[in-house]
Image 1 (cartoon, rainbow, N blue to C red):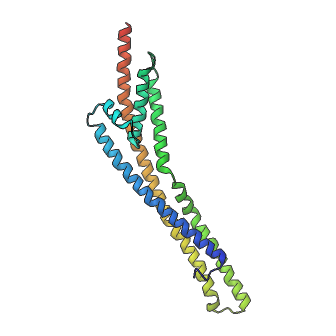
Image 2 (cartoon, helix red, strand yellow; image 1 turned 60 degrees about the horizontal axis):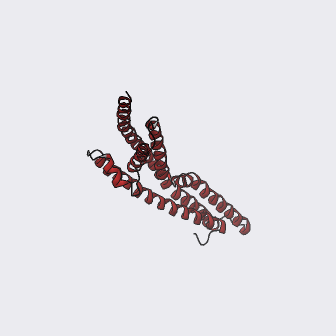
Length: 223
């Protein structure tokens, strides 16, 4: 049916097939990405809450590329340590700066997790309509065959209609998995963002207590 189809219908079918391959590539890549994200989050949280010193944990992570909660931790600790290298009084406003750093780090992680999801959404929404375009063109071609042969038998119109329906089927074949995967991964992104925000709040509270302790010490020394 493909080789006997009109050139426009062939182009539609080929485009939908390539779009489907692209979507499945993204789907498998995202499945691995979210699985690795969950493993890294669980591993880091286990180490973080094990009682290990924050300085030791920062020293072990600062020299490598980090993702997930580890990236948030390193970014916040880097801002924390910069305050020790600045002039006295740098602790004032530090909590707001750390919160800002954590927010930016969360936004970067979410952006990394959401990358290429727009492709799935586009294919899911446009795939059926592109397939429908091939269907309409195939049916028009069938009517032209009827007019040219002046024969209304099923043998004349069946090939064109079959080609048209194949284009519709390919459109659905590309769109349905893309739609299901997009909704699933969007839910995974929301869960990952909530988990990162929860860790950021907990870590910010820990650093906030440290900041209050240092400010109290400064006041006592000043008195």
